[in-house]
Amino acid sequence: MQEKLASFSIKNWADDDRPREKLVQKGSFVLSDAELIAILIGSGSRNESAVELSKRILASVDNNLNELGKLSVSQLMRFKGIGEAKAVTIAAALEMGRRRRLEDTSKIIKIQSSHDAFELLYPLIGELPHEEFWIVYLNNSNKVVHKAQLSKGGITGTLVDVRLVLKQALELGAVGIILAHNHPSGTLVASAADKQITKKLKVASEALDIKILDHLILAQHQYLSFADKGIL
Image: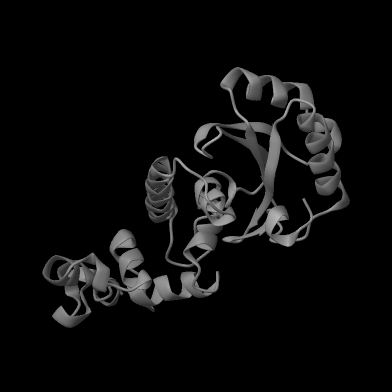
């Protein structure tokens, strides 16, 4: 039994099937997602290799790494062959990837389209299991001067403190505001509450000559832009 289990360890695979050596010799970019995950977990179970196990894990999330990143340690441990140590390793690696992308957003200093706003905000709220409402403040050149979380949890009109939003805009010297929140359900539909919040902030900000430039709803690596849809 021990001998059979050992045969599934990466170090015992044929050279062409060893992702570690493949990475060293050819570079990480040539490896499949399953091979990269196989390197993280090191070995499979008695009945399947690490790559086969990795493929099975990926198949459970439709081969979507963003969805894989949402799985908790306990959810990963439901796969036969994945113990706590392996689950923690996978979760840590995916979190590193998310943080790397978050650092890349620091290069986005000017918003020229709804897609720019999406790229800025997705690493912050795009993959969260709960709703968060964020505000991006822009100067008259559409450069980002600040971004901040306004609320966490369900989105309702009562959670939006208009005075706080506008007070911060005045303190920052911002003349434009982009609203954004996420839909963990994956639904890209603006609810009545979403529209009510947008209207409430738009009316209040106009009195101070501050423009609500857009309201983005983020979900499943996609977004809905109120400005693009003409519902702002």
